Length: 148
Image (tube, rainbow, N blue to C red; front, top):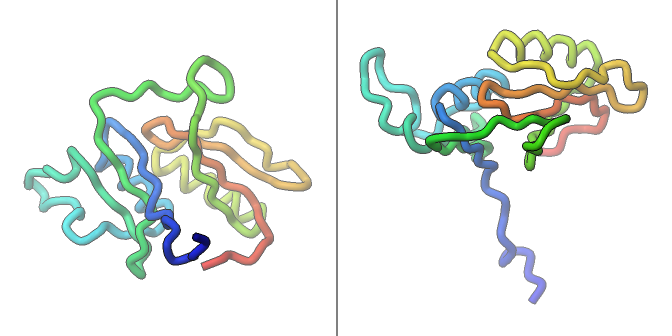
C-alpha cells in the first residue's frame, strides 16, 4: 500500500524542558509563533497549570510547530564536546549574513547563548546556539526559497 494519504504526517517537534512556559516564550518571541488556544500565559497572578505540563506553539495560520513538555530533570547537552550529545536540534534559516547578524542579537537578548560561530563560512554561514533550556539550534544562511 503506497497511499500518500495513509502515511503519518509530522505534527510538531516536542522539546522536553524543566520550565515549559519559559522555553515556549523564548521560541514564541524568536519565531513569531502563537499559543494554541488555551495555552496562553495566565493573567498576572493566575495559576499557570498548563505551563507546568504541556504547551503548543503554532503559526499564526494555525499549523502546529513546537510543543514543550515539562520534565523534572533534564541533563544539559554538552555538544560539541562532552558526554551528552544533542540528539536533536532545530535548523532555522535566514536569507543573508546581515539577517544572521540581526538574529544573533535577538537570540542573545531572548536568553540564548552562542555555541559555535561559522558566520565566515563561504558555503553556509551559520551559528549554533543553545536555547535557555540548553537545546542546541542552528541559524544558517540559505538562499533557497522558503517552502510553505
